[in-house]
Image (cartoon, rainbow, N blue to C red; front, side):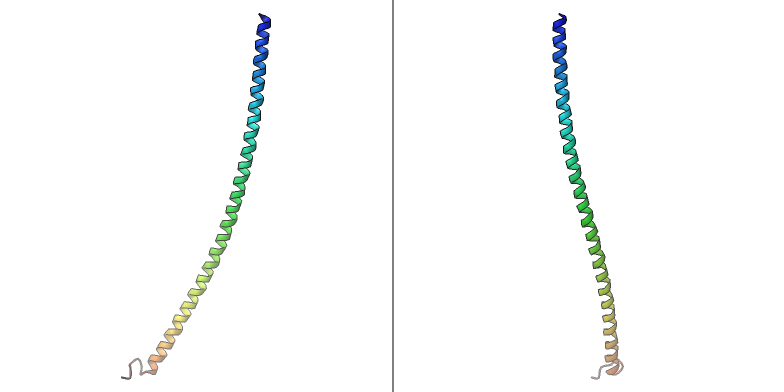
Length: 98
């Protein structure tokens, strides 16, 4: 009976060892996959940060171009107003010559 118990304990112990080794191997595989996924996520975040920085730089450049265009429009409007006033003055102080 002690021999049977010893064999049972031995087999049970081997089964536990095998399961434990399998679980450890599976855990290592899971950890490796998790690291790969984490590295991929970090790479994607880095690319996103680069894209956002480039987009922000483009937005700033576009805003500057818009500001310059608005200044040009204001200058053109002022020039048109001066020309219009000059023409009105030349045609009899704002009255048509009809």
